[in-house]
Image (cartoon, rainbow, N blue to C red; front, side, top):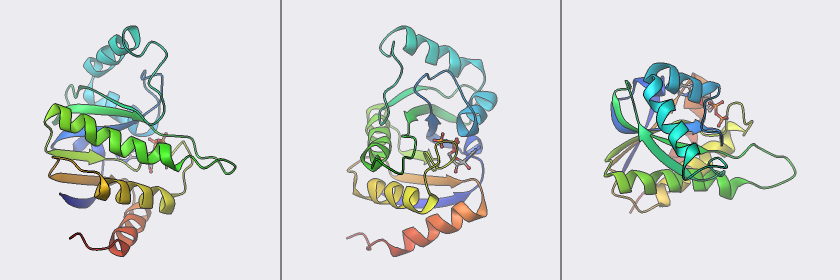
Length: 174
Ligand code: ADP
């Protein structure tokens, strides 16, 4: 599997699946979530509402992932995952790692070969970018998957630089 870093907007990625940094309500929010629903149109929200009316009546738990259509986005699916809110007192990094691993598991179920991830939890949820990048990159590198192309889409040059530095420091793949 290849990992690439891209500076840009996740809603513009031509990939099989785009990962949304959603919240557990699945009913939209700010940041990546707001951008995906705005650009993807009402079909995505309609499927999210159906999930809330069915399997996820209490919302999607933190660390889990579920797919919907991508509506008008240039992708086939949106994989919604709920990152943990950063806490200074509690180590929630296993939940953040779970977002990446579960998203890849759902991507495999869909048959997706290319997946674009945002830097989950590093916006409104307050996760420090360097630690968020370390968890993102090590988890994706170490998760067995049929996905061939994983793209991290970073929204600004600072996030891009942090991801590039962490990726550089990872051990080479055998
Ligand atoms: P969370 O609630 O999980 O923290 P956010 O959407 O607030 O999610 O932010 C996650 C990361 O995504 C942040 O680093 C933010 O700068 C970035 N981001 C916001 N909008 C976009 C976008 N359109 N494309 C890619 N990344 C984005």
